[in-house]
Image (cartoon, rainbow, N blue to C red; front, side, top):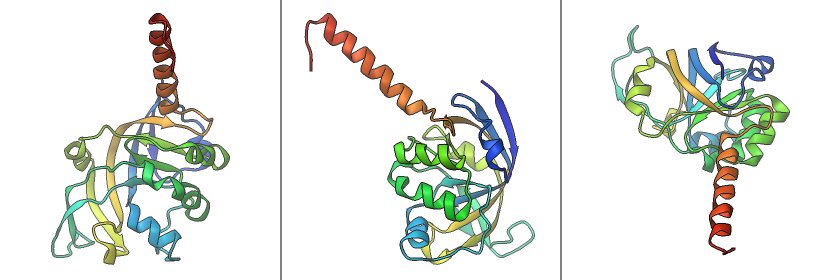
Length: 203
């Protein structure tokens, strides 16, 4: 297992250095995105003014405070609690997010499915996992909300965060077909079969 420190954005070659079981710490920029943002971008044809090429997105609808715009809060928001939501329901958006917007990394919890894994292999991407319930810790890794787009969808806006040492995060799906979640499913199935066999039973 290798620890990677990535200054965002990155290219496909850098993504393909990541392997399931490695850990990653991100620096510079991270984008927050969620269901409504993705629906508006890909089902309703909206475009963002942000350049997501080579960047990471995190599945989130953050709790933030509205404040006066300032050097410390250029978007008029301060982070209050920026947690991560379950990723699986956004499965159908992985490929268009990568093909149209150039996203390389997806951060979330719970993993994603075979369509996402195939897109990662073909286009060069990876899934970085966060343990559920770590929102308080995650928030400390965000220095500033630099900008926000599609804010009519608040809090499921498209957020641009300035980050410092965001991680370590676990590489749970990689560009080589590796999946931490598939490994767990296979292990569970094997153990289940062994238990059933020891009892002289079967499904």
